[in-house]
Length: 591
Image 1 (tube, one colour):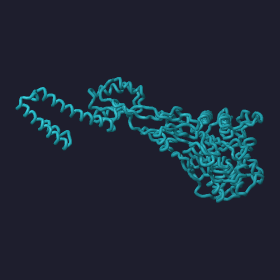
Image 2 (cartoon, rainbow, N blue to C red; image 1 turned 30 degrees about the vertical axis):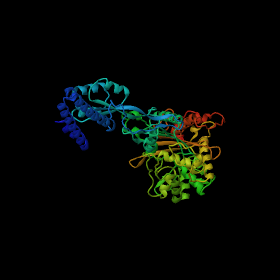
Image 3 (tube, helix red, strand yellow; image 1 turned 60 degrees about the vertical axis):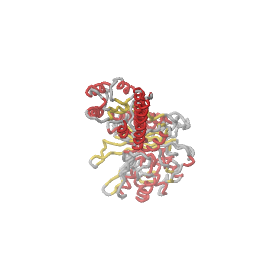
Image 4 (cartoon, rainbow, N blue to C red; image 1 turned 120 degrees about the horizontal axis):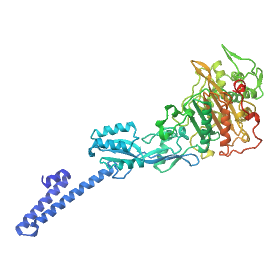
């Protein structure tokens, strides 16, 4: 093939024409030089010209190859350039402490046509990466049996990359990638969530604010959560302790600032390590705070009595007949510990009377009670951004039976996050502020909707405190923090009937209950799914014996972190801290 023919193949058409003209001119020069017996006729001169031409051609080809290697999207170890991966910004708590970040990892890629002995390559790679997952091993065998370049395994550390590199085998390349790392392991796992191998948020905060996190990563910034890691750590520690003691099948813990709506801590038990998701069973990934629905029992008396007071159908000193059972059709509503007497509304709350609460609900009527429940956010899915957030289970018909049952937390199921938002609204001067997982930086812009009057809010704060000093929440009291709260123990259903052996026990609290309406107040909620009773609870499974003491321990630990000023009024009484006898636990414990 002549140089002209070669030029036609590798150069554009116009370039070929110029090359041909130049070559013909050169040949003509040589012919003339030969006729004149000039030095150009020297063979060495001809060789120099030809060599120069070929050097020029190879230079053009080399530039093209370099351009292709740099910009074709195929990145190999030789180039040293990182793969164009999805960059995610760091996640921090509200105080700037790191919760999630990116660390450089590597992908192993093999070009089988560049290997010499494929069986040997497979053997050596597996020896260098003994922990390679089964999926990676299958890809390794598949790629080495074909001719196309293929991905083998990702997420390799620098040490693993070096182990493969030291094999000194042809056809093995590495691509740099960003791997999402969670340095706190299981701490805050359900609220943080995790990102998948493609760098996209797949659960929790990572998924809810995926675009914000990616934008922050591209700008070299970070994204803060509303979580306070000090509070999160204390909550998880106490939740795991009571969950283990009661041998529960699941548990939830929440701490919120009811004035701002900020979620300061959120825990779901059992938990998982987002760095090693394959090591946990599927049930560990359930965010029970946002994605599980329960009947919450007597904690719902907060809503029904607040609605009764706010609607004006009762006053705190209104007397309600709670003697005997309340018959509704073929059903009789009884109290867990019947007083068999008339009670004031205050006593209905502190004695947790189902009968008294049902009568208050009947005075309101279904339309009024349903309207208040709707305003409290109990009838619709909570809007907090989490994909895990699920819709409540609400009655289809609000007849007399449903009204009575819903008034004390049956016939309606909500998530713990919904419960926290609704209780927070009543205690926040009667204003519903949506829960958020982002820190609130401008309190002047806080907006909410009024659900009850300021007077009703003050009355409910008083009742919550009264229930801790004189009612079912005594074991949650913490000296100096003015703790208020309400217990709730609901029987689960089996084959359509209540099962007394399986209960859900919860305690929702607010502190401090005293002070001006516009100060920060905090809500702490703990829910235990199927507690079994223990020596610590005297064998009892009700909320006053299981969840309430755990809430008290959480408040004692987190109060200083939150800057709550402690008013010393004396140490807790012996009544609050005395061991519970088995007889008291089984027959006399508050519900």
